[in-house]
Length: 517
Image (cartoon, rainbow, N blue to C red; front, side, top):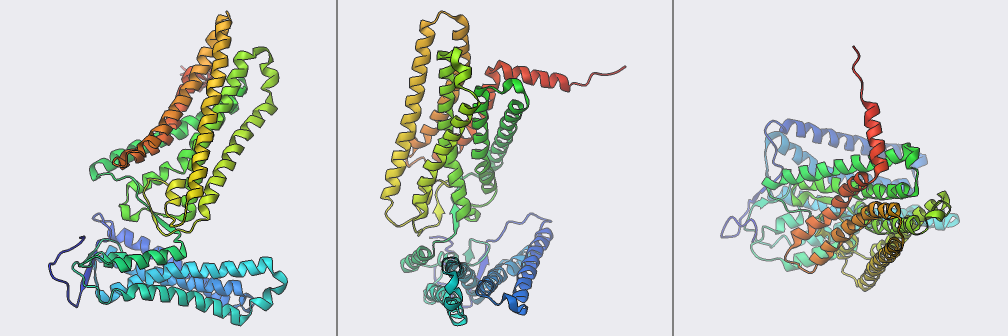
């Protein structure tokens, strides 16, 4: 049992103590003014919008009236949390009486649910305006408008009222709420006995409204390891950005590198930057905050999942077209310039990105259709399996498509690599040209090395799914799947390519300033 500080249930008057923020000495006033500034901007902005809509009769339309309800909802949520948080920053006071605690928790949950119901009503209004424009004024009458707004607030208040009605007779044995403000879960965690009915109802309420606020479990790191892990990932991310973007800029600036091999490699560098830019900064931010504060919006989570799967799929498709380029260069050297012309390079690039986009779009569209009844993502970042595991519906189609997607992608990738390199090996064995064999060894070994790094780092997380007793190792390897290839690809390609090394040496040589005497 959590937070049990007394053997017998507490009696009124009950005073809770919020865990709050661990404010460093001397930073309290700064955090107070920062929170005060945010609160004043929020109050001023929302009140100005509210007053303008009320005063201007031209804005007395359904859409703007509903915006007023959303403004009131925002004011309710912010006023329930920020003033007490400012007191905490300024005075260090963390105690809160029972009635104010229930009132704060009630307001916070009402804000969350009312935001969903009001946005649902606004979506209905936009549907009528776009799909039934000629009947809009007859449908969205003043009476219908007021009924919709009242229904949105009534449903929110009814659901939260029932949720908090269970608190009345629940005996509490602890008084420390492990959060920065009071909530239903924070108060019920202090109960003397399990509260299954409360938990089931809370899940039902969450299921009904498909919460847009999700929580990432993230990496579980100790205080001693937090900063070394943060520094390692930060340095790796900075290196990925500098190395990959440097390679891309160098290839684009130097006309001697405007060859199909290097132009196709630009796709790999751009893919590495894209895959890491939506993942590593978020992981870095989550490392520095407690697990309870690792909150992510549903749409941000979708974008991160889309980028993550695009990165993995693109890595395969781009390396496949690079293998085709090496096959033509080694097996058909006389026709290479004719086959791998500018149009062919563009077609291969568009095909690689287009196939990835279509496959991943279908993958996530099957997940978006599901209703969600959970909010915890047991992963350091968002991906498709983490998202559809939030649903209480049947995910058989998601599993089938996900499995087919993985099998088709891996089999196509591996088979294309085996086929092209078999033909390249056969061409080298039958040829007595030392220059051809040397060229094949240099360029193909680099490409094959990149492919093996990508394949190994991708297969290890899949293998670790079979061992649920090692969840943290699986999380770390999942992050390294993005970081390791992105760090090694430019290094391996840059060191093996004589043309890139020559351009770099020329660049640094020209950059030297000779001393004058």
